[in-house]
Picture 1 (cartoon, rainbow, N blue to C red):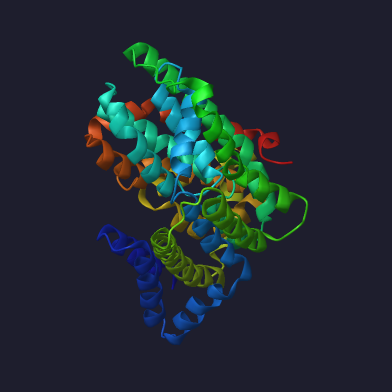
Picture 2: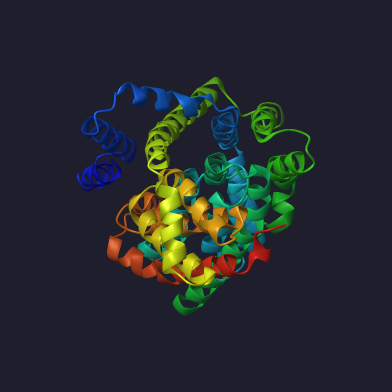
Amino acid sequence: MTAPMIWIFFALLTLAVPIAHAMLGGVAAALWLDGKPMAVIVQRLYTPTQSFPMLAIPFFILAGNLMMSGRFGTYLVNIARLLVGHMKGGLGQVSILGSVIFGGVSGSAVADASAIGNALIPVQKEQGYPAGFAAAVNSASSTVSVLIPPSIPLILYGLVSNVSIVDLFVAGILPGLLLGVGMFATVWLVARRRNLPRSPLPGGFRAFRSQLVAAIPALLMPVFVIGTLRFGVATPTEVSVLAVAYALVISGVLYRDLTLKGIWAALVDTATMTGAVMFIIMASSTLQWVLTAERVPQDLAAWVGATFSDPWMVILALNLVMLVVGAFLDLPAAVLLLGPLFVTIGQSIGLDPVQLGLIMVVNLAIGLYTPPVGTTLFISMGIARSKLGETVRALLPFYGVALLVLLLISYVPALTIY
């Protein structure tokens, strides 16, 4: 039953059928060919929706949408300009630092690419940045958001692999910062070669002092999330609800810029993103049920153990597979599809599941700015109105940085295990 399901799944993907529909189509065809009742699909679709930890996803998304609906986005950009705008290629550095800060609020690379890209790319082009480079910086730097807590992909990985979401959040901080520092260096080198301008905040600290004080409570959201989880005050789901309450207080009471229209827009965006993610979760759960029933994870782990003699070779093979898959599947779908399979393989070689989770997310994040599917790539290109060729050429050093960080976290467990 497994072989027909996989062939039909890939055939549907080739025809540009959405990933969740392709999964369900493959499962339905396999069940029909095997003579099993279709009612099984309905049962398997319903089961994952009853997970209490799954509620963390829509609430964290909502908290980020509420926070970014008002003046905080402007504060974020101004803070970044104050800190790094004086460097060569200042607005490129602002994009990276903004992604680090934004990741602690939204946990979504797509939201980051859209929000920061719309704010910075037009200004970058006015200051002489090549359109391809502006799009490259935005599309690559936005993926830092999926490592800085609260990260939606890390939540998904924790759910499908039964790994502590708290441990994943804490482990994601250092790789996220390493990725950010590497991108800082890349932008600085390119900016020196192309003589890109500095962009300090007009008036400096004195002009921005009052805004900085106002922005501090919002900037403390990631500290609030990590601290509450780390000290066992609340579960991830409870913390996500507290994050929404925190965002409402900051935006509605402190900033006083949260309108009914803004709340409605945040709710609609949250419902849309949650619906897309949940449909993929439901479809992947059905596919995983078939694979587990056919003992595919166990057989695959046994084959890997018999084929590769050393653990480092297994890790390298997993990385190569994830890089290829990430170029064709969106990040949440790839995490849900590969997570259960690769956890079994990781256990067979003694790879810590937390370390594997970070390896997986970094790998698949590279796919977000890699053709042919790259979500943040095409969002950034649309804003910058750049061509694919020039953008991908500008991305080459960023690929190098991401692959270096990937190698470090793959073979230096201390970077991800605490």
